[in-house]
Image (cartoon, rainbow over all chains, first blue to last red; front, side):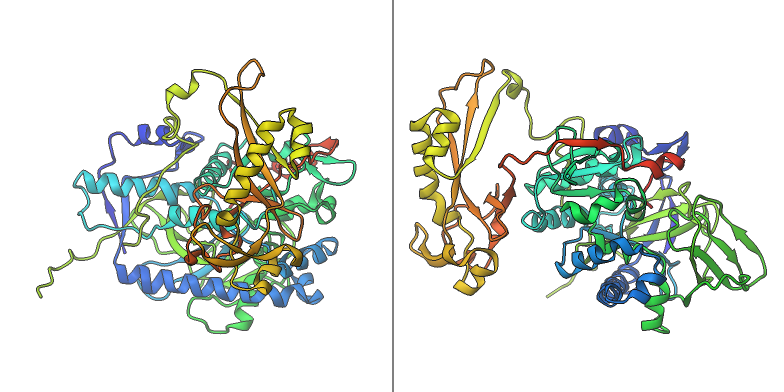
Length: 392
Length: 189
């Protein structure tokens, strides 16, 4: 794994406009950064990232069934009691899921370590699946990357295929929602709608704030159509805490990601994974936080924090780092395993699982060892030695 | 190869691939309905001959487009027992599958609201045991009449909600308040 500088495509901004990629620059700061790329060997991708991602995904799914039948575990994950039966029922019905992103610390050596699972509202999807792919094609065609250069990114095809599988399993009509004022989230949701349409599954878009609640307790679109399935790029724990939340269990609405993702989009899953798989090479030791002072060599993360907010690090060298943010409440502690610094910053690997298939990565690079929403997306390529000719 | 062979955008891009300028010539509206009988169709559209034709055409397609199961038990996982019957595709392959329980008819309306002269399009409709309606998926296995489709079940169908299914909304904006308290570009993570 190397970080290699490369000339930017002269027309990449025009490419972004063509593709409707509006959030390549956020608040005047670059988000899409193609002044460099990360180069992997095929072995690094397959052995160190792809296989462990598939295994971690399976380990996480294996936990859901245990958690939903245990009041004690639901307590530990701080899942409100009003929603527990609803969440459990969504799992018993095996309501289908679309995707998830595993955040892995990896620098090309040693086993990748799981930082956390983003299994409810993973973002950076469009740039990983589509725009990164286009970058590779353009750079190969321009001769800046060798013809045999590849990328760990079967995401677009996997998304279309997955929506095809979901078509018969989601009660219609299907609506895609995100916060109306977030360009980034609306862009991601537009892309997912697009993938669904390519699979023959039509969905409408609605801002999360525009969703209505009828007198008989059903969720409606602006024209009073009852929403059958709601794809929401919005944290489930927030939906549950908001005014309409209490109506969710009785409304008949099916969510995508499904309600049972409340179990996995929760950092409490990290100590539970550790308890069941002590010493697993891709896991960092983790425990539920008892509130005592953070020992050196440990990191504290609230159960529900996102985008690197409210993280407290106490490194082995005695240094401490803390990120601010809006999250509070119960937390976990995890063994510190700081990201390696490359020229340009600290890369974190987002490893995507579509359906149950580990099929691509996106790398976000930040100036600090805590990856925040200020991170830049840097593309990657698989650049092994040129394939040698085989004589028969 | 570890990457997608191709990617495409249909809705997002500024220059959509599928829509061409000539389609914009005239504003065309399509009236589509799901009907459980020719009579219900006639009452809704006032066009008995179109309804009869649509019904007959859907019935002709029904076996080829139906979900195909190898056994009655497998079929009954998805459909009511009385609907799961032995059928034959147009090529003569035998299978177990649900009967057609209704049909879709779609008619072009001109921009003045009258019926355009084109013949209506129709498709068979199937109703699963949860009362959900579905039609052959576009580009799916609809029309497949070989034995290779047996066992695929409902995979070739697309669910629809063509029944009037509306409710009076009492209030809005009960979701999204957390986002208002947070700054930043994204509410995912």
